[in-house]
Length: 82
Image (cartoon, rainbow, N blue to C red; front, side, top):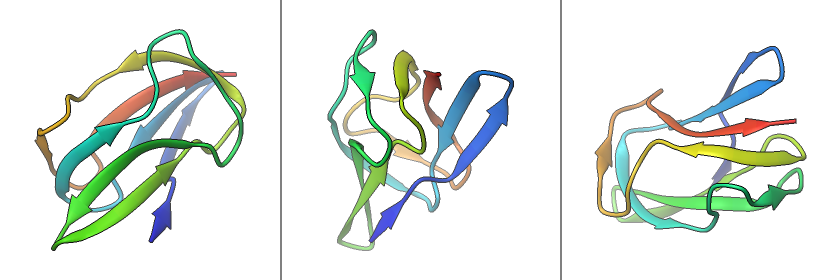
């Protein structure tokens, strides 16, 4: 399953959890440049690994979660600026 739920605020994009789950892996760090559709993290829900992709080309400016953290649906995960 691939998803990139997103909320735009000017040039700041907040990638949000499309479903509740556990953060298994964060594939980026603050300051990283990312391409559109690049893997940014993996969210586990109901024993399925969901690949969360960057909705835009930009720079990671904030990581709002940690590996192992449980998050509800629509929880902000990562902020990207384009």
